[in-house]
Image (cartoon, rainbow, N blue to C red):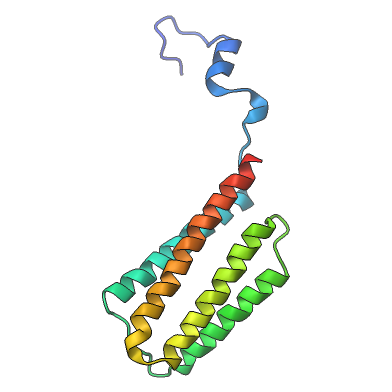
Length: 147
């Protein structure tokens, strides 16, 4: 749809000056976009954990060993992610993903093992780690797309 009074298409060199050469335009793949959406979801999950810690809506579950099991599972997942990186991910992306999962797993497991007064601090620390992971993951994704 042309909005110029005379109608017609833009001349080739003028259009390329506005849009840029065709070789410079690179569309992200579906897998890349899902990876970016994953990092945004991780960021939002971290923000939710911080919000829960700030609103003091934290209480130990009836079975605190569930938190320990969740922490062990997250730590295992992080170690496994570090040992078996994704094919398309850079080494820095793999380190950020695995390191954040290991730290969050340790913090979640320690919620059940430490006194209840530390639960908000541990939960907000886990949320902060996830927020930082989401920001770093999105930045590393954007940096890898520009190369």
